[in-house]
Length: 83
Image 1: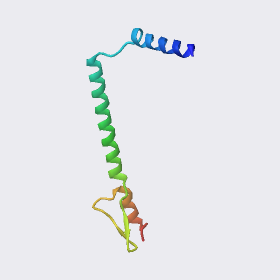
Image 2: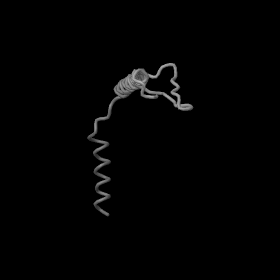
Image 3: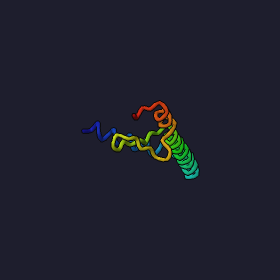
Image 4: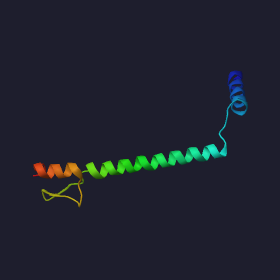
C-alpha cells in the first residue's frame, strides 16, 4: 500500500513541478489546427465516398441508381454487372 501512495505522490509532484503546460494561446492555436485538419479530412472522405460510392438498390431484380452512383457505379452499369 505504501508503494501506491508513494507513486501517487510522485506523480502529483511531477505533474505540478516538472510538466510544462501550454499557454492559453498555444492551446487555442493547436485546437484550431486540429479543427481545420479534421474538416479537411472529413471533406476528403466525403469526396472519395461521393466519387467511388455505389448506392445501387435492387428492386424487382432491376438496378435502381440514384442521380449519381460514383465512378464504380458507372463502370458496373457499363459492364452490366447488375443484370
